[in-house]
Amino acid sequence: MPDIAQALAAAVMGVVEGFTEYLPVSSTGHLELAKDWMGRSFHESFTVVIQAGAMLAVLVEYGRRFARLADFKAREGFAGWNGWLWLFLTTLPAAVLGLLFHSAIKARLFAPMPIAVALCAGGVLMIVLERLLPSHDEGGVDAVGWKRALGIGLFQCVAMVPGTSRSMATILGGRLMGLGRKTAAEYSFFAAVPVLLLAGVYDMAKGWSTLQRSDLVPYAIGLAVSFFVARAAIRFLMRIISRHTLEGFGWYRIALSVVVWWTLVR
Image (cartoon, rainbow, N blue to C red; front, side):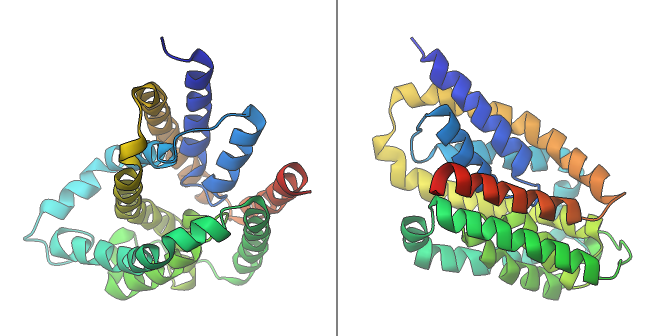
């Protein structure tokens, strides 16, 4: 018989992951808080499973966009070989560093104090940059280009530090390279797919031998909840940035860093 409490906890984790994966607020920080408050633990690969739900949400929400990657006659924009090249260039830096330093980062930085510091530092950076950077025209994802794709990939490496937020790193990276908020956010969504896929395959391969049948129900619940909540979160973020700056997320990160420190560190 399934553990009802564990199933409910998995649903809560799915909500947290789905809502925070694409917002520039660090899903890691929120997941660690949620686990601590619920007093629950999960299999080591549970996080990548609920991240897969968030990844599927992007594929469904932007299905037509991703379908253009199969149009190999296209010569411009995020389509055909161009689109594949851009995603490859954005993914490559983090993939290489992940293979080299994944274990060391997980052992040394996956702790409350580094997460709290990264949350606060990222919040301050977001506030400063949003006040300094000019508003750019929204050229759409087709205007990204291979140079920006590679540059965003380099910024994405910063997100290997827990608490930084992959979304924050890629959106701010895109903004620093001349993209508008909406364009930077949409490309950030697209760039998440190969990164989350590779991370998921890597972690599942490592933890496969320790999986038990009792893990399957929480996995399925967490994945499904994450999928539906992530779709709502994507639409929410796009509405926010069409009317406001990202500065509010910066202040939220600073407040959350205090909560993480007060709850998990002191």
